[in-house]
Figure 1: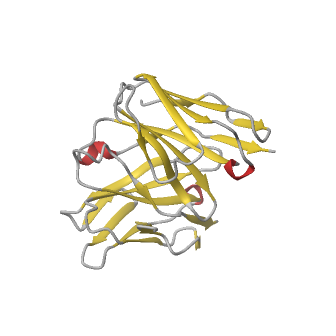
Figure 2: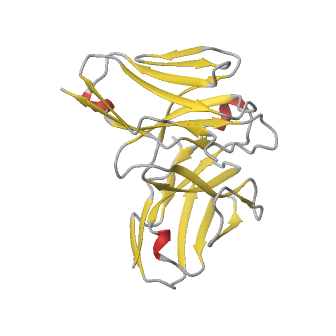
Length: 115
Length: 115
């Protein structure tokens, strides 16, 4: 049972344009969402996060939008750069306390930004 | 800067061998995690630990065990390696759970091949 889904295995974008990566979740108990970026032969690195009490969080070229009613979040990268080419994972966590920081990850989306 | 190190980047073992994967973090984090990453499946949680000598099963614990004798070290053990355990194994750590502290920090991964 995949509770966090990234339905697009890959995305190809021209340099300078917008990249939009999507993520859907099914568990309404999730209250914190994160995006990780992974280059080949490296571990994932944290990119940006959003709490369920917000609908938008921005950090430089990266913006995450959350639509709780639709159980959907998206990551916007503007403008896209060739160095953004990587696998992007969406992740979600439940309420604090006994969750011990457990994250549930999506399948990942391979982003390729062409010069 | 948080540093999570894994004992090997690449490992080749034979079916039936006992395999140890070691992970060390230097940030005094309470929580530690073992994931495997497979194409199309994303990161799946094998086991996690929220304190020394404490462990909890993740989503796919079958065929694996773990050990946490010291706070900074978390070991993943394949009691009798099988070919379907060929995968990328990622270790992560995080501070005690609760909102923004759910961010996990990952090691570079161990690519395990079981022949």
